[in-house]
Image (cartoon, rainbow, N blue to C red; front, side, top):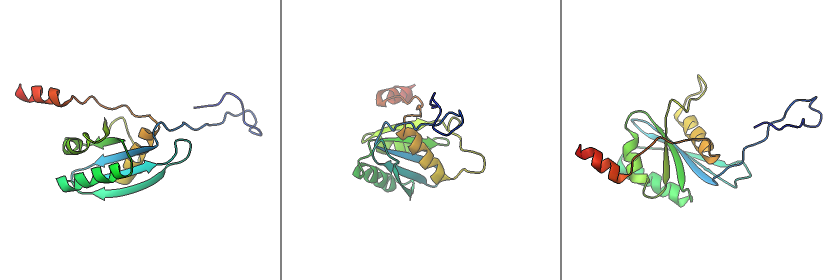
Length: 150
């Protein structure tokens, strides 16, 4: 977002202002076939967040460990990016305890040459913390049940 008035000593240039965070605690989850890179961002909304990253496996006990870690830190919301259908077990385990936003990987693109799982997770968490992500439509449990019958 740009400020209309020039900053002192900037020779008429516009200066950048920061976007305030809408969440004090958020998570970014990059889901892969062999594991999940998870970033936890927490701190006051008017300050920079502290970032903690961890790598988890894809088994149900590992997914339960993610849920316990995030809930233990007071995290109530997270953004998740996944290729294919690897996100489904994560959603099934975590969604009952916290809000999960599934983000389309095509809309969330890192710069060329800078893609790593942990950078993606931190970027997802940061954008989610500031309310800059829109999630994909995910039907509720009743919708999934009806769809399975057809």
